[in-house]
Amino acid sequence: MDSIKVFAPGTVANVACGFDVIGLALDAPGDEMILRRSSEPGIRITAIHGADLPLETSRNVAGVAVQALLQKYDQPDIGIEIEIFKKIHPGSGIGSSAASSAGAVVGVNHLLGEPFTKKQLVRFAMEGERLACGSAHADNVAPAILGGFTLVRSYRPLDITTLHTPEHLWVTVIHPQIEVKTSDAREILKQKVLMTDAIRQWGNVGALVAGLYQDDYELISRSLEDVIVEPIRSILIPAFHELKLKCKEAGALGGGISGSGPSVFMLSKGEENARKVAATMDSVYAPLGVDYKIYVSQINTAGVKVID
Image: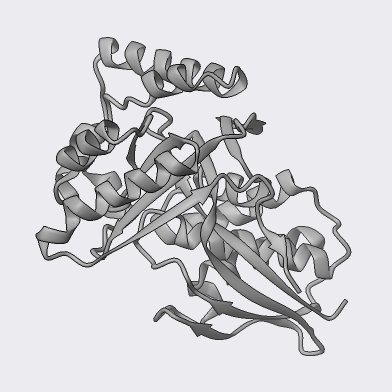
């Protein structure tokens, strides 16, 4: 195989209570990437469509992620060309850098005959995240590669598991067209939390996992509460509290900030409710004078997909 085309999904990280450990993959939006074998050794980003991002391998998350893979593969003479079609806006909070990193390593793995497992690919893709925000976190790249909901049990050693995805769970995401850099959003977080807040957060994480496995939408709804990160980061997002309140009134189970923002996600039971939530998001944001995009999506349980 000399060329492959992949779809790399957007992702929602944190999922309210699961800061840096829980994420989910979306059916839309997502990037597309074409990866080619080349007779010329090395990694080259040949073109990026839809975003102004570095072509230099060492400054591009896809290039860095593939470099990590090839170092482990131990064949430095391999040549790889990468062409990226960005559909996820950088700084959107729905996993733009993770999509590029995940799509690149999955595509190259296919070109090489799949020498690595999907969970091994997560570690390589994390190097792209390290470049993007200074932290090699996995809560975006793990669901992007593995699909569905994922849980990072540990980073040392890396221990990731997939979680059950209820059949009727849908996601509505609004992306205000403002940029919030992950590195900046991490800087404003408190380094210490109250024990009472930590206990409440642990309870929500455990209950969210239980709700997913039990297909208990009411338990999922009660668990979508973040008492540690959201109170601080929400100040960066226009009309956040009004948006969240009205979406729940419209039938959403609950939600919160997607990743570091500015996107906001809401989970719903069924497509009809998810589209009602989308209409509510539109009604809240239309008067604000802020450009925005809204996506309605099922949970993508496949992760990065080969499409050509």
